[in-house]
Image (cartoon, rainbow, N blue to C red; front, side, top):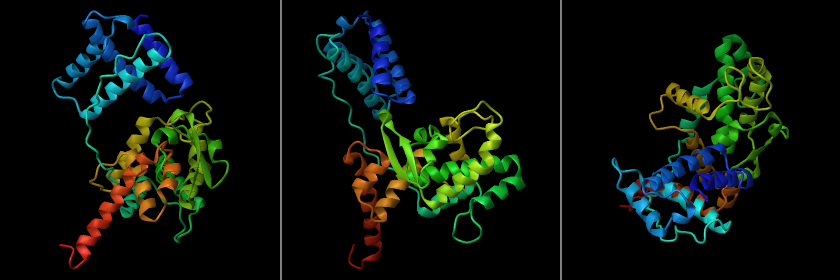
Length: 323
């Protein structure tokens, strides 16, 4: 089979049968385009012409590229190639899998950087007005009043506050949040999240996030919805279309600037902070795994290292014989 046709077959498989996100499938497509271009330079355009030696040579060639690629980029590229050939072997398109001798590069384990609770609160305030009445209880009506007073900017910032509150309250990925429909919030204090591989999970939503979302639904979303075509999506852009991943990223960057946060802040920063703060508060790692939608608890356990480091810092600082 021609390699180009084999790649399209594989991409259909991961899209339809495995239900991978558009973002992941696009990454596979880019990686395999690089791979096929290299094979074409070697005069190979058919699946039968790919050998183990060629695959190893490709990996070595990419590793020696200038400027040197990051280990994580190489690992992702090799993972794309490996998944492609394993699929071909499993489907009987190829006799065997030529990636057996491929060894992924060692990637440094980077601990996720979490914000402090005070930094999260500053970030949320930077996004938009807090739905409060001056006490501790959230109140959607007061945030709606702020939007009326400040006009267009208030409408957008109501949305931004709801977006960031929901990201931090649930620990969901930004791709999961922007795919939410209004009906996913129908159960009040829980949220139905569709994660990787179209797997669904139920995540509780705290009162502050719910109040911010209610304020957005009451005043901001109807106004944004009138500007575009009807859509069930929860979060909308300024023109009424579903909010994009890039726009959500920009919302967080602008909120970080308003909050004068010097640390790098991304959508995943709020996910890291969610997990870290839960574990610091005594949550069981298995519960956090379920809330994050991790397939393996090993992925979640990286956050336990963060909390252990924090405990060690406190111990060294406070104990008279720690050092």
